[in-house]
Length: 199
Image 1 (tube, one colour):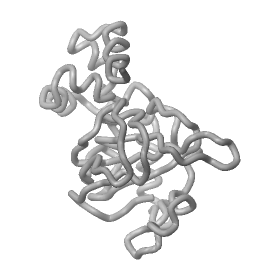
Image 2 (cartoon, one colour; image 1 turned 30 degrees about the horizontal axis):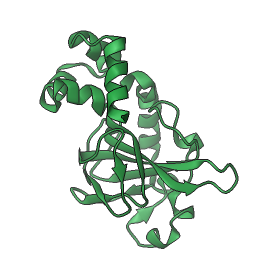
Image 3 (cartoon, one colour; image 1 turned 120 degrees about the horizontal axis):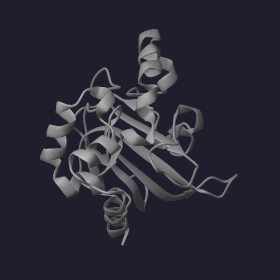
Image 4 (cartoon, helix red, strand yellow; image 1 turned 90 degrees about the vertical axis):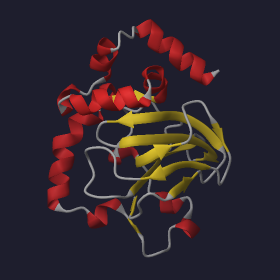
């Protein structure tokens, strides 16, 4: 679901934990929160993602309260045609950046219907043009795990250095392996950084 807003505060709809936050080539700045709400069929916790954010005020591993400001909406990432907040929900109960797409997400209005009754809300499918669908096809390869940069890596080198690197690379070269090579970050170091963020 896409909401037509720009540079507006984004709040967590429920108490939860930030499973992943960072930068994703096609979605820009993102935050994924595991909520306390559960799918009644699978009993797994619901995970809600916020994409194309201008900025984030939470990091991987943080606990968040219901109504807490977690980000500011924006227009980051390659897969956007203008400022908006993308929200999606899944019942996977986990999130590593790579395995959630439109085929396994759930329409947010089913879970919080009282929030989704205004004219600014529209299901993604209803306003998707043929041109946008074509863009989605072209950008599908950028949805793989190697294009997800968790805050643990970004914070290690600093956001300014990270953005300099991103902006200096061709789109297809904006991968985690290339980033780690450029900043001399071993797999072991990345694992330690992620562990520290969750402790």
